[in-house]
Length: 326
Image 1 (cartoon, one colour):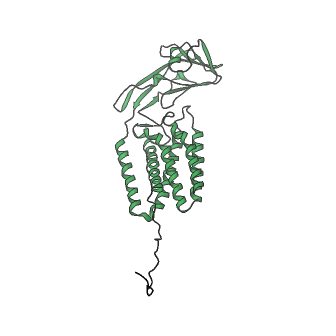
Image 2 (cartoon, rainbow, N blue to C red; image 1 turned 135 degrees about the vertical axis):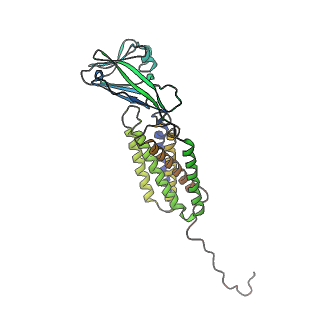
Image 3 (cartoon, one colour; image 1 turned 90 degrees about the vertical axis):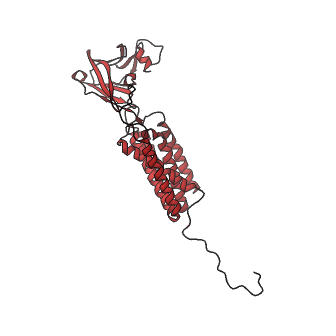
């Protein structure tokens, strides 16, 4: 049992950075969605994407197309041409958006590619409390010398009913603990089932978030791969274990599921969920991981362990020998 728990504990340490990463970046949920308008004819050959939790803009240009992005003061900010990507170090917007460190001047070469992404403060939505359209944004650009505009809309998404999710989680956890208390003979089976389901739900949540919320706009393959490896290792340990060892391994899996899901709690108080799953499905996966994993961990390592199916028998009392004291 110690060997299995040691391996599971190491897996928890490996998975911790991915769970903690959600507390900073990437972002898993927001109050607003940003949508880009359909590109006009002037933007032909230019490809646009909103990244990093709807706060960064990615611009790509086809070969032969020259793109100039203007800053807040309509000063030249970024340029994509045959030489690659350039930033105007003298642009106040470049310094404010941290595209380049202050202290430099002129056009600075960033890369030899034809794609650039930066944190764009003009994508910051206005403070609106009511769900629905919240305004528009517009970023002036030039494509092959012709003025154009990258435009879109802010939409505030209604927040989920946080107290409903919280109340449901409390009721579910209480019901599961009650079943374990009144049906102690099935406690081990319940613990293994909850640890397995909670771990699977956490893996689904982590991988579907990683498929959509990578700051670079791509897929977080490292996070998906590490989550899959950890899931396979824990599943093998669980299957190869038996008896009380399997119960404790299920408890460790449940604890890992909770740790991996805590960074995703913002999905329960923000409306726009950045996941490959719909918002309700993503919240459900996180809720199952947290509730199932927590109850499995409590049942596995609580002092009052499962009652054995075979009660301890006392020696049968035989006839008292003559002369024996009572």
